[in-house]
Image (cartoon, rainbow, N blue to C red; front, side, top):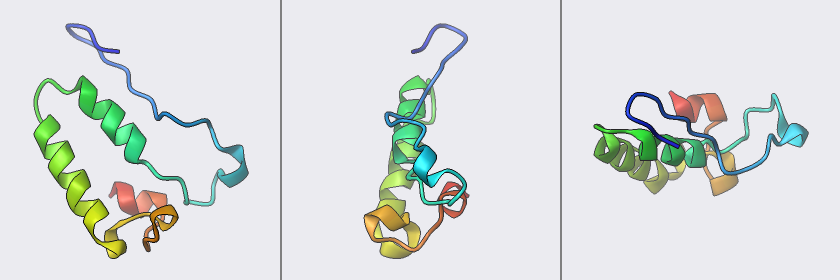
Length: 74
């Protein structure tokens, strides 16, 4: 949800307690939710995320990638 001065974004999945702390969550939905709140820079988020998902070495493991969640976020 977005207003003139504040915005809130959340991933579209649950809290996933079964994988908490394992570094295997996919952060893509959170980035895309946050993108919807951006007044500027949304094209950068789309382009960067697309580039990351293009190659297995820059995807999370659930997408047959090599990265843990914090590595993907970096």
